[in-house]
Image (tube, rainbow, N blue to C red; front, side):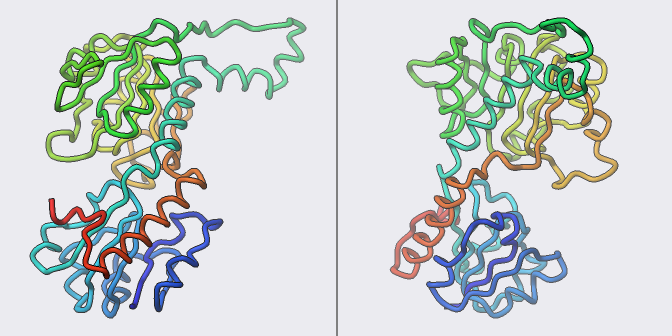
Length: 317
């Protein structure tokens, strides 16, 4: 079995890929530029990747390719329709990062809601020492207890975030396709109007692109805290940046972007240094334990595929 890993660097330098190497002849690339992909996958049977885009522009060269394993739950970077037409199986990994993403989501919300960045800056700058005052209580922060936490997308991650929100004493409202007993399920517009905190965990598709847009931002509470842990394009990033700059919303956090890493002309460059903004480099999924689980599941997907199984297959949906 010939295996190619296209972007091992995105899995972390501390993660041993020995479990993959034990399966067969394994070629590991730290990263792959778009114009390198076709040549690198030309002779392999299995491709393992995280962020690389695979479609007709490079898959045409992979004459022996049988299986694509995405080291992620989302697989919008893979042209699944092309794979179906050409007999290439595609597997993702579900549930491996729920604890990790939920942890970062809640940490981001609490940091923004409590102005941790500003209070920490007051101490590290030396101002606290120079002030001669035992405490500082501005900017004003509020208890999260009793606030309304709206969750967009209620899969494994959204559900775990919801459990934490309830444990913190928040009133939980959920926007999901199928209403569920035990939760207050509302439409997206109601959620946007009522929530003090909004966290986003929905997949990116045609119906969710720019789900958070200028119109919905305009009806939100002026002090709302929004955190996007889904995909960058689920939000209209230009509209979000403008809402932050004009004070239309209270705070914004994101770990995901429509272009990763975002470039010099991305609208978030205008807000990234503001105290009410917390931007992280698509790291929420990547606690060490989560990455180990992800790799182990990829190995199981490969073994199952060669045994005639359909574990993790998304091309069959």
